[in-house]
Length: 423
Image 1 (cartoon, helix red, strand yellow):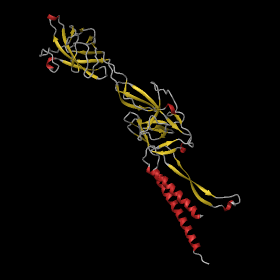
Image 2 (image 1 turned 120 degrees about the vertical axis):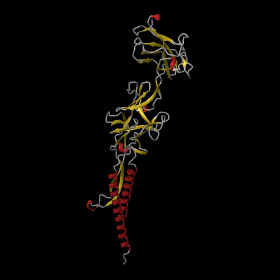
Image 3 (image 1 turned 90 degrees about the horizontal axis):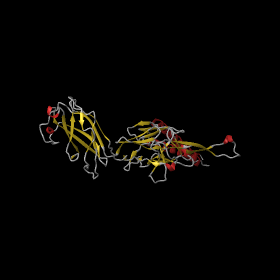
Image 4 (image 1 turned 90 degrees about the vertical axis):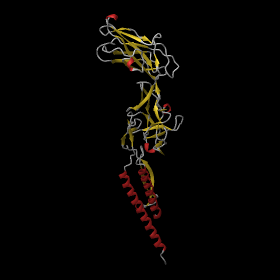
């Protein structure tokens, strides 16, 4: 029997060394949780055996118990890197249509080609659906949705009104070149650009060229005037067929005409077949003073389709996307899961776990509520393996193996001695 007793010790020590080796191999695996081999002694007894004379029959591996202690938290520059400080698992699915649900502590997420937020294995992060204010509108695993980042936000609004307030220098001279040519700087005094939008939401550049035509003298009542030539891209703007708009100023430098919006004739921009028209208003604070040319203010009411620029996740797990047009949109709230007995979860590899009858059913919730840990964006949880501790345990397991080997060798020598006894 001593052979089998020592053999059980050898097998147990070998299992422990395998467990420790597995822990060490995953020291750099994000979200990995180490395991600990636990043993139990084996006793063969009967009701007729004197308890004082019982001899054990060795040991048996009772189980490899997972240790769900917190791993080190490492800061990163990726907003989609998530970590749970405390209890809780991220919920992931292999695809949008899959019924298979896995749980992980590895929060290293990224965006795939279809703009879904996935982990390194391509599984989709699950979130609760929310309304525009970020309030959860449905709960439960059946209501979970795969987090997807929208490419755009809002609808394109073509520019209908443009306004500008500026000062045209009273000291400016009449250009030496009489005929206006936007490619000839000697044919105008100044220019100003304003970004407008066409019906498709594409940005276009409206350029206004200012050309002085008269200076104050008695013949025109000591007033002065300017011509404004306008282009959207390379297309000239006209007003009732006229190529320019006239600005008149009195002797104090105050704008006297036009006092209402100038309506440009309908036009189409390059690459668009939709006709567009907008009005241009020179603000009442537009002046002609001795100071230098200056655009004090400009505005337009067009709006481009917003292109996604970034995504943030707050401590409660609300995912918000920001867009180039200034829009922000709540996309969902990160779902967390917890278990009555996490040590009973089945390890699947790749830092995945699945629920079992031992772990109990998943309890779903959100960060920092009802016992769930805090959610940290821009943070990754590393493995909870302590190299020093594991190496010391490995040495101890090796010593145990050697001791059981020695006991087995001793038992073998005793048996051989018995075999060599002769009468």
